[in-house]
Length: 113
Length: 113
Image (cartoon, rainbow over all chains, first blue to last red; front, side):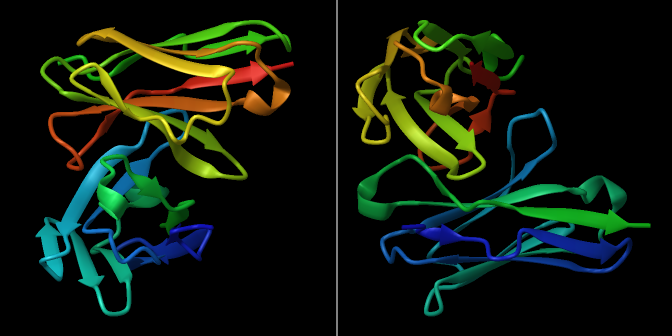
């Protein structure tokens, strides 16, 4: 049973436009959410996070939105750049007090010139 | 800082052999996590340590898997005996606190023939 779901395996966006990556979760105990970016043959790299007491967190071109009632979060990247092409993982923690992360299966973002 | 260091980067072994994966966390980080990535299951938490003590090993798939952290700067994940279905990329991550930003190593790609 997947507790964190990323329903789009891939997403193609034109350079300069906005990229929106979506993530849904089922465990209402989750209280901290993170986005990671991963290039081939490398480990995931932390991008941005949000606590459940907030509904938005912004860091440069990256903004994460959290809708607790819908159990949904999204990552906005604007403007999208070629270097943003990577696999993006949504992760959550707090379910039952665990400190490890529960990951979605990832969305492969492709930025087209 | 050198980041999280994992060795070896690639391991090819035959079914039934013992495999040992190694991890050096970032100095000063109190938490160490072992994850496994497969096509079918994505990134999943195997076990994590806090101050060298195993806290949650519920993700360890079978008794063939074991993990140790003899000191703050070294951890091992051992598979004995290995099976073809253990083929995956194994990541080690560390963090100062949980569940905040975890820093991942480059991973060990394990192939069991």
